Image 1 (cartoon, rainbow, N blue to C red):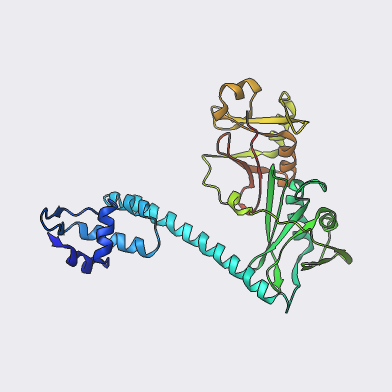
Image 2: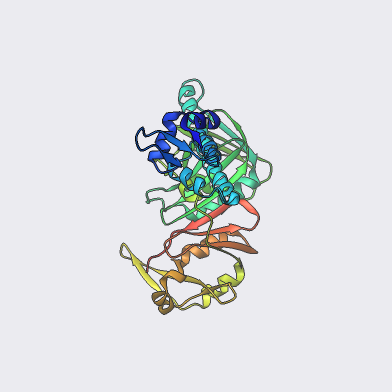
Length: 345
């Protein structure tokens, strides 16, 4: 048996920290003197104390530290927990870097307002065509496309709250970070096929694009585009299925119409399920009603538009139950995807 002071020296935890983790039920001493309250630990608890010290230093929550200690006999389980926490730290660091870049941009505003983005015109048009379908109607709340610069890349995002599309494309960025919503009429001027470079100059009060020998001027929208990242960082889907776009389109055309209404407007719903072989099938409304949890329902028109934006060939669908968004991805291409919000039964 080892006293609390010795365990503190061997593990790197202070005596007060060991007392805290005893009280929290994370590392309970093997013996406690009933008279003095002095704590003694078994030899094999030193390993657990060292693990706790390391996880404490990297900011793992107490509840997860406790689970890691319980899982010490299963190293693979502990490693998975470490990997999960590492990814969480990396995501947090990325968010912090973005926020610091924005702060730097605020400090630099009076010195340099404009951001210049240069990329191939064809790449810009392809990325805009991948997201444009999800932009809101000009009279809607978000009638534009977000242009957000990153480290050597331009991210385009469009959403009308019922669907979202995102595309990221490599680009040369000069000037402070930019995050502006550009109106759809301006965006549509940039979607035509063109050769050579596209040059975008973005400032808080004016925007300009030079594409294919044409110059397009405009003004950014005075809207605060929502944080799209919470939807792009969804957990791994329960089911991921590859589909042929043309085949799914044919199934949608043949499926009996299912009507729903929102704010006085009628629309059709597509109900997706899986057959016994694990392939996507279109389900009837009665099947949806009988087994809601086995199906994902989305706006049929939105799905068709997302298929068009994904291009010919195959797409990957993330099916994660009736209340999670349906994601559509191009196989092997993480630079663009779209999300459709589910329709509740």
